[in-house]
Length: 247
Image (tube, rainbow, N blue to C red):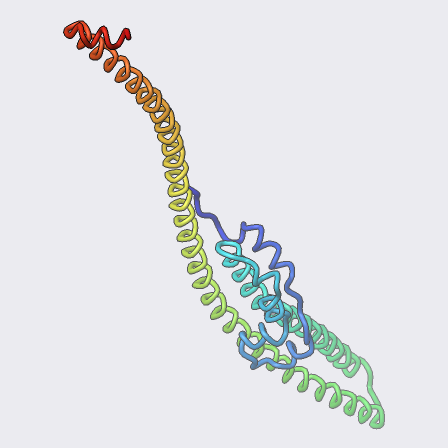
């Protein structure tokens, strides 16, 4: 009986997973509140692949593995892309913050080391205020990035749970298909055996039929001989009949 295996090890899973491609990358980053299923449909070629003639031609375990690959990959690819881009933005903000803090330290050091005239002090103050405004904006951006990351992580966990359920369902379907396949193989083996037995019986029947024909012929010959013997016996008993036969 065939043994079950992980759908991810199925050749169709590997192939169809590689066919998923991103689209609308700007939409992936600009739509933080978009549900995961919309990302799958609007930001990948998921629907095109499902409607393709190549996918529609699949059956049984091949179709289950291909669908699982498309569903999983088309879900995870946009999420990972968005997570990567958000992380890049976060790193850029961290670099800006580090530069600002370094600049602040240098400014404080200069203010302590030098007696700066009023004009220069006003200029420094303006620069500090500008830097402070930048920092405030960067902090706002930082908070927004953190909010996006929290939302993305929550959606990712929820989607992982759904994908895990889909995976378990796919595995159950594959086991059922493989069980049906085993039954079908056993049924075909029985049919082949029955056909073989039927062929032997037919050959034996034809042989016996031929023998019966020969026996019928032999019986007919024996009947003729028996009639001749009976007639000869009657002639012996009745001399007149014998003389008539001779005449």
